[in-house]
Amino acid sequence: MTAHFGRRLRKGAATTAVAAAAVAALSASQAPAVTGGHRTLATDQATPDATTDQSATGDSPYYTDLPPLSSPLPSPSASQSPSIGTPVSMGEAEAGIPATILDAYKKAETELASSKPGCNLPWQLLAAIGKVESGQARGGRVDANGTTISKILGPALDGNGFALIKDTDHGLYDGNSTYDQAVGPMQFIPSTWAWAGRDGNGDGVKDPNNIYDAALAAGHYLCRNDWNLSTDAGLRSAILSYNNSTDYLNTVMSWLEYYRKGTHSVPDGTGSLPSGRSDDTSPSAPTTPPSSSTPSAPPTSSTPGTPSAPSTPGTPSTPSTPGTPTPTPTPTDTVAKLADAGTAKLTAVAGEQFGKRISTKAVTSAGKTVAKVRIRFTIAGTTDATFTGGEKVATVTTNASGVAVAPALQAGETTGDFTVRATVVGRTIAGLDYAASVTPRVADTLVRTSTTALTCTAGGEFADQVEVKATENGAVADKVAATATLIKAADDATENDKGPYFKDADGKTVRTLTGLATDADGLLKLPKLYADDTTGTFLLRITTTGGATLTVELTVTAADTSSAGPSSSPSPSASASTSASPSA
Image (tube, rainbow, N blue to C red; front, side, top):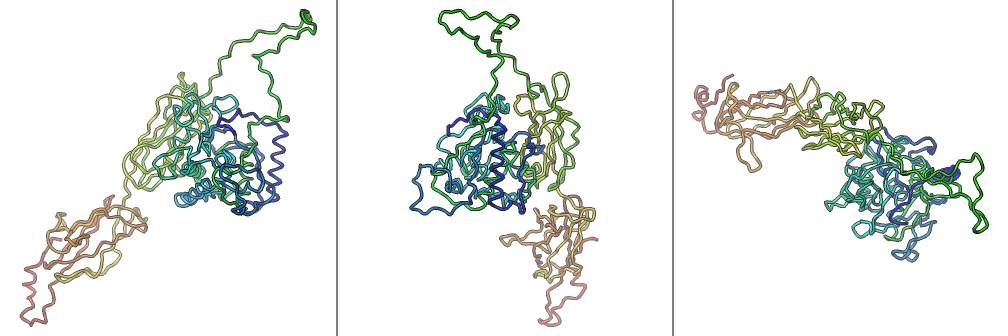
């Protein structure tokens, strides 16, 4: 295949029917349904998730070859393996995936199983998409690091038979400074890669031409919006969001089921090269009518030198070629600014979901709202807050009222302020910033989990450790920050310089502990306490974010000296005179 895809044309009804029949035959003869039970192939209008108007590929062309109807065969023996750089033909070798490409898919599956376990991403889905998008990077033509030997580019998305996506990367990835083009083995368009890109091989670079980066990015892209790919609905939404075409969905599904039946690795550069493309023309496809701006030439006489016959009366003469018409502005072209659409104050407690969502409207210079405009929301600043699904960027299309509502924001554990910026995809106008804030987790009540008195002899250690439970409005208050200080008196929170103490990692005396936090059950267990030689009653004060405070009483008694004789035991009055006696 060439580095630059051809124009994508709508396929004829006959071609579509043949493809659908082949996919149906495959489903009936091969693997059981991906999620269990019989799978019904998609035949209705493709409808991706409403929050993701722009697909990963910009709906660029893709390979339409279907897998063989027979089940995959075992891996060929070493003596049968083709030499490196020699593509093999269609057939049993279709089950073979180039080694580096296969490794990238499996590594991406492992990472997603850890970072987004609820997604249930199978590596076979990445393989199916990689097969359909680039023929497994053109049969595995990648270097040792997984980067394609030559660029794999889709057509310019100039609106002529494709989506209209003007340049967003200044030609950095696709070499086109006018329009975006799909790039790399997973065919990401630059505007999507800008937020979906990942560093899958740990080299510090996010490169859409690298299969490790692209496969991991594709995995995260498919797992956004909390989609569960072990369900029919989640799998369908994810695939259609990658390329919004029912034929595309069916083709990917056929390869997914084929790879689930078995596959094996083949040397890089020896994978099979598909031939069918969604933008291929065929005899069954309807021919493109002549353009109205290019009239047919008038008939000529069959006899040389004989002038043409005059036109039949009443027949209009051939019109002259008109000039190039002015293109009709797209909805995006008419947007003059972005305006807030009633977004309330964005505040959430750490770890919780924001109660309000960002609403932004696209407006013309005349003040009218504009529908069908893609708005990109990007989280910026020092924060671990994300949109639903764990992403930092979300693209939403304005509705009939010209309003785009961003996915819900999820606060992380980092407290403080951050910004969400709204911008128009495909148009350079000023963005709109929204201030958001994450506040610390709080507790309003602290209680000890034990009623046992805390006592110790001078110079010894307390047998029991102090444990408390934090609640907020009666509910468990987890991950709440706390401080513990041995204070001088109930009305003097100054750190005491004598009496009980903690030890740091070096065994040194410490009477204030910071950086504490309750666990998932709202519990906080303090380190062991020790006593110096001062006897008496002492106070330990524990405070949390939110104002919960608990003061715990500690008692240190004189060491037992009865073995030294009666005279060694101090009288009660003597003991009292050497004790610390904080006020109540």
